[in-house]
Image (cartoon, rainbow, N blue to C red; front, side, top):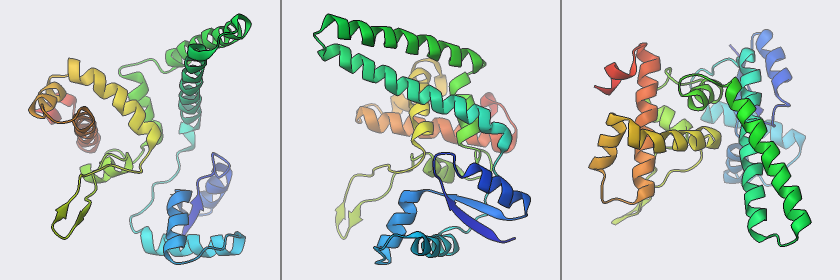
Length: 244
Protein backbone atom coordinates (compact mmCIF):
# COMPACT_ATOMS: atom_id res chain seq x y z
CA UNK A 1 0.00 0.00 0.00
CA UNK A 2 1.31 3.47 -0.91
CA UNK A 3 1.92 5.76 2.06
CA UNK A 4 1.30 9.50 1.97
CA UNK A 5 2.48 11.97 4.59
CA UNK A 6 0.26 14.91 5.58
CA UNK A 7 1.11 17.54 8.17
CA UNK A 8 -1.46 18.19 10.89
CA UNK A 9 -3.11 21.56 10.34
CA UNK A 10 -5.74 21.96 13.03
CA UNK A 11 -8.41 19.88 11.33
CA UNK A 12 -8.11 21.19 7.78
CA UNK A 13 -6.44 17.91 6.83
CA UNK A 14 -9.41 15.70 7.75
CA UNK A 15 -11.26 15.78 4.43
CA UNK A 16 -8.06 15.15 2.47
CA UNK A 17 -7.17 12.19 4.68
CA UNK A 18 -10.66 10.68 4.36
CA UNK A 19 -10.58 11.01 0.57
CA UNK A 20 -7.12 9.46 0.24
CA UNK A 21 -7.93 6.61 2.65
CA UNK A 22 -11.09 5.85 0.68
CA UNK A 23 -8.89 5.60 -2.41
CA UNK A 24 -6.74 2.97 -0.70
CA UNK A 25 -3.78 5.02 0.50
CA UNK A 26 -2.15 4.71 3.92
CA UNK A 27 -1.85 8.12 5.57
CA UNK A 28 0.83 9.22 8.02
CA UNK A 29 -0.32 12.27 9.97
CA UNK A 30 2.85 14.23 10.76
CA UNK A 31 3.86 16.73 13.42
CA UNK A 32 4.88 19.87 11.45
CA UNK A 33 7.62 20.71 13.96
CA UNK A 34 9.27 17.31 13.49
CA UNK A 35 9.15 17.70 9.72
CA UNK A 36 10.66 21.18 9.95
CA UNK A 37 13.48 19.99 12.17
CA UNK A 38 14.10 17.15 9.73
CA UNK A 39 14.45 19.73 6.95
CA UNK A 40 16.83 21.82 9.03
CA UNK A 41 18.94 18.74 9.79
CA UNK A 42 19.30 18.25 6.04
CA UNK A 43 20.36 21.88 5.67
CA UNK A 44 17.18 22.75 3.81
CA UNK A 45 16.23 26.26 4.93
CA UNK A 46 13.97 27.27 2.02
CA UNK A 47 10.26 26.86 2.66
CA UNK A 48 7.80 26.71 -0.22
CA UNK A 49 5.22 24.20 -1.44
CA UNK A 50 7.64 22.28 -3.68
CA UNK A 51 10.38 22.11 -1.05
CA UNK A 52 7.87 21.15 1.67
CA UNK A 53 6.45 18.32 -0.46
CA UNK A 54 9.93 16.94 -1.08
CA UNK A 55 10.80 17.16 2.62
CA UNK A 56 7.58 15.40 3.67
CA UNK A 57 8.16 12.60 1.16
CA UNK A 58 11.71 12.07 2.46
CA UNK A 59 10.56 12.26 6.07
CA UNK A 60 7.95 9.55 5.49
CA UNK A 61 10.43 7.26 3.72
CA UNK A 62 13.11 7.67 6.40
CA UNK A 63 11.22 8.22 9.66
CA UNK A 64 7.96 6.26 9.30
CA UNK A 65 8.36 2.49 9.27
CA UNK A 66 5.38 1.06 11.18
CA UNK A 67 1.93 0.74 9.58
CA UNK A 68 -0.19 3.81 10.31
CA UNK A 69 -3.67 3.45 11.83
CA UNK A 70 -6.57 4.70 9.74
CA UNK A 71 -8.28 7.88 10.84
CA UNK A 72 -11.50 7.10 12.68
CA UNK A 73 -14.10 9.59 11.49
CA UNK A 74 -16.58 8.49 14.15
CA UNK A 75 -14.31 10.02 16.79
CA UNK A 76 -14.47 13.53 15.29
CA UNK A 77 -17.31 14.74 17.58
CA UNK A 78 -15.43 13.48 20.63
CA UNK A 79 -12.19 15.13 19.48
CA UNK A 80 -14.05 18.40 18.99
CA UNK A 81 -15.58 18.21 22.47
CA UNK A 82 -12.19 17.56 24.05
CA UNK A 83 -10.56 20.34 22.06
CA UNK A 84 -13.18 22.89 23.12
CA UNK A 85 -12.96 21.64 26.72
CA UNK A 86 -9.20 22.21 26.70
CA UNK A 87 -9.67 25.70 25.26
CA UNK A 88 -12.27 26.56 27.90
CA UNK A 89 -9.85 25.51 30.63
CA UNK A 90 -7.23 27.83 29.14
CA UNK A 91 -9.73 30.70 28.92
CA UNK A 92 -10.78 30.10 32.51
CA UNK A 93 -7.15 30.35 33.60
CA UNK A 94 -6.81 33.59 31.63
CA UNK A 95 -9.82 35.02 33.47
CA UNK A 96 -8.38 34.06 36.85
CA UNK A 97 -5.06 35.68 35.96
CA UNK A 98 -6.79 38.87 34.83
CA UNK A 99 -8.84 39.09 38.01
CA UNK A 100 -5.66 38.99 40.08
CA UNK A 101 -4.47 42.26 38.58
CA UNK A 102 -7.48 44.25 37.37
CA UNK A 103 -8.44 47.17 39.62
CA UNK A 104 -11.28 48.71 37.62
CA UNK A 105 -14.59 47.45 39.07
CA UNK A 106 -16.40 47.45 35.73
CA UNK A 107 -13.66 45.46 34.05
CA UNK A 108 -13.62 42.97 36.91
CA UNK A 109 -17.38 42.45 36.48
CA UNK A 110 -16.93 41.76 32.77
CA UNK A 111 -14.24 39.15 33.40
CA UNK A 112 -16.18 37.64 36.32
CA UNK A 113 -19.27 37.20 34.10
CA UNK A 114 -17.12 35.56 31.45
CA UNK A 115 -15.65 33.24 34.09
CA UNK A 116 -19.11 32.18 35.24
CA UNK A 117 -20.13 31.45 31.66
CA UNK A 118 -17.03 29.36 31.09
CA UNK A 119 -17.72 27.36 34.24
CA UNK A 120 -21.26 26.71 33.00
CA UNK A 121 -20.00 25.61 29.57
CA UNK A 122 -17.39 23.37 31.17
CA UNK A 123 -20.02 21.66 33.32
CA UNK A 124 -22.15 21.08 30.24
CA UNK A 125 -19.28 19.50 28.32
CA UNK A 126 -18.31 17.30 31.26
CA UNK A 127 -21.89 16.09 31.53
CA UNK A 128 -21.71 14.98 27.90
CA UNK A 129 -18.49 13.10 28.70
CA UNK A 130 -20.07 11.40 31.71
CA UNK A 131 -18.94 7.91 32.62
CA UNK A 132 -16.24 6.12 34.58
CA UNK A 133 -13.08 8.22 34.48
CA UNK A 134 -14.82 10.24 31.78
CA UNK A 135 -12.27 12.83 30.69
CA UNK A 136 -9.23 10.53 30.76
CA UNK A 137 -11.06 7.65 29.10
CA UNK A 138 -12.51 9.82 26.36
CA UNK A 139 -9.18 11.59 25.82
CA UNK A 140 -7.33 8.32 25.37
CA UNK A 141 -9.99 7.02 22.97
CA UNK A 142 -9.94 10.13 20.82
CA UNK A 143 -6.37 11.39 21.04
CA UNK A 144 -4.35 8.21 21.64
CA UNK A 145 -5.94 5.62 19.33
CA UNK A 146 -2.70 3.63 19.29
CA UNK A 147 -3.38 2.55 22.90
CA UNK A 148 -3.24 -1.24 23.12
CA UNK A 149 -1.60 -1.73 19.72
CA UNK A 150 1.95 -0.61 20.58
CA UNK A 151 4.49 -1.41 23.29
CA UNK A 152 4.50 0.27 26.70
CA UNK A 153 7.56 2.35 25.81
CA UNK A 154 6.05 3.36 22.49
CA UNK A 155 2.78 4.54 24.05
CA UNK A 156 4.75 6.45 26.71
CA UNK A 157 6.74 8.12 23.95
CA UNK A 158 3.57 9.07 22.06
CA UNK A 159 2.31 10.82 25.18
CA UNK A 160 5.68 12.48 25.77
CA UNK A 161 6.38 10.48 28.94
CA UNK A 162 9.46 8.51 27.85
CA UNK A 163 12.63 10.00 29.40
CA UNK A 164 15.52 10.60 27.02
CA UNK A 165 19.22 10.31 27.86
CA UNK A 166 21.46 13.38 28.00
CA UNK A 167 24.87 11.71 28.24
CA UNK A 168 28.19 12.58 26.68
CA UNK A 169 31.37 10.68 27.48
CA UNK A 170 31.64 10.40 31.26
CA UNK A 171 28.94 13.01 31.78
CA UNK A 172 25.55 11.59 32.71
CA UNK A 173 22.89 14.27 32.50
CA UNK A 174 19.38 14.27 33.89
CA UNK A 175 16.75 12.40 31.91
CA UNK A 176 13.98 14.59 30.55
CA UNK A 177 10.72 14.04 28.75
CA UNK A 178 9.88 16.04 25.66
CA UNK A 179 7.49 16.19 22.73
CA UNK A 180 4.45 13.95 22.61
CA UNK A 181 0.77 14.78 22.76
CA UNK A 182 0.33 17.60 25.23
CA UNK A 183 -3.45 17.26 25.48
CA UNK A 184 -3.11 13.60 26.52
CA UNK A 185 -0.33 14.37 28.97
CA UNK A 186 -2.23 17.21 30.65
CA UNK A 187 -5.33 15.09 31.29
CA UNK A 188 -3.20 12.17 32.44
CA UNK A 189 -1.49 14.50 34.93
CA UNK A 190 -4.81 15.41 36.54
CA UNK A 191 -5.88 11.76 36.64
CA UNK A 192 -2.58 10.76 38.24
CA UNK A 193 -2.95 13.36 40.99
CA UNK A 194 -6.16 11.60 41.98
CA UNK A 195 -4.69 8.12 41.48
CA UNK A 196 -1.84 8.85 43.92
CA UNK A 197 -4.45 9.23 46.64
CA UNK A 198 -7.15 6.77 45.56
CA UNK A 199 -5.45 4.00 43.59
CA UNK A 200 -3.44 1.50 45.68
CA UNK A 201 -1.09 0.55 42.81
CA UNK A 202 -0.16 4.10 41.88
CA UNK A 203 0.01 5.19 45.53
CA UNK A 204 2.41 2.35 46.36
CA UNK A 205 4.49 3.08 43.28
CA UNK A 206 4.76 6.75 44.26
CA UNK A 207 5.74 5.77 47.80
CA UNK A 208 8.69 3.77 46.46
CA UNK A 209 9.91 6.94 44.77
CA UNK A 210 9.75 9.03 47.95
CA UNK A 211 12.66 11.45 48.22
CA UNK A 212 12.75 12.29 44.52
CA UNK A 213 11.51 15.56 43.06
CA UNK A 214 7.74 15.93 42.82
CA UNK A 215 7.89 16.24 39.02
CA UNK A 216 9.98 13.09 38.72
CA UNK A 217 7.49 11.14 40.82
CA UNK A 218 4.51 12.48 38.88
CA UNK A 219 5.98 11.67 35.47
CA UNK A 220 6.89 8.16 36.62
CA UNK A 221 3.37 7.60 37.97
CA UNK A 222 1.78 8.98 34.81
CA UNK A 223 3.91 6.62 32.74
CA UNK A 224 3.02 3.69 35.03
CA UNK A 225 -0.71 4.43 34.75
CA UNK A 226 -0.55 4.74 30.98
CA UNK A 227 1.47 1.54 30.54
CA UNK A 228 -1.05 -0.41 32.64
CA UNK A 229 -3.95 1.01 30.60
CA UNK A 230 -2.09 0.08 27.42
CA UNK A 231 -1.74 -3.51 28.65
CA UNK A 232 -5.44 -3.62 29.51
CA UNK A 233 -6.37 -2.56 25.99
CA UNK A 234 -3.86 -4.94 24.42
CA UNK A 235 -4.90 -8.01 26.42
CA UNK A 236 -8.59 -7.24 26.90
CA UNK A 237 -8.29 -7.50 30.67
CA UNK A 238 -9.39 -5.37 33.60
CA UNK A 239 -7.38 -3.20 35.97
CA UNK A 240 -7.09 -5.85 38.69
CA UNK A 241 -5.47 -8.37 36.33
CA UNK A 242 -2.89 -5.95 34.95
CA UNK A 243 -2.16 -4.25 38.25
CA UNK A 244 -1.54 -7.47 40.16
